[in-house]
Image (cartoon, rainbow, N blue to C red; front, side, top):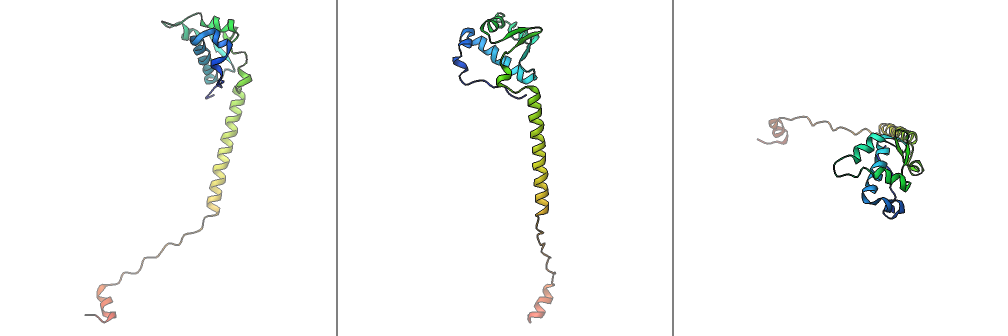
Length: 143
């Protein structure tokens, strides 16, 4: 899945105001991971740890997201509770992708058939026969 939806009013959401800029960053990265890995809103614990256990990062951010109601703790990681309310499921994404591929193939096939059936032959000019310059002069009455 190439994208996840993020509301343009995200900056004003009270839950995100409570978790601050770093929490908002982790939340949005989590949305991106859900979309990239096609997990329908599930975020693996290992992925989360890899984000917050780096030097200078806050390892309490996942707990803050859970407390704010942005994530829910589940076996093996977290879920974004309303991910599928705003984003297509992996199954829907695959179905749309397949439908788009079939439509593109049909358009290409139709265009090819249309181009070949409506093609008008273009006449190819035949080269003029080469005439010896002496013969031309003789027929014109020249020297």
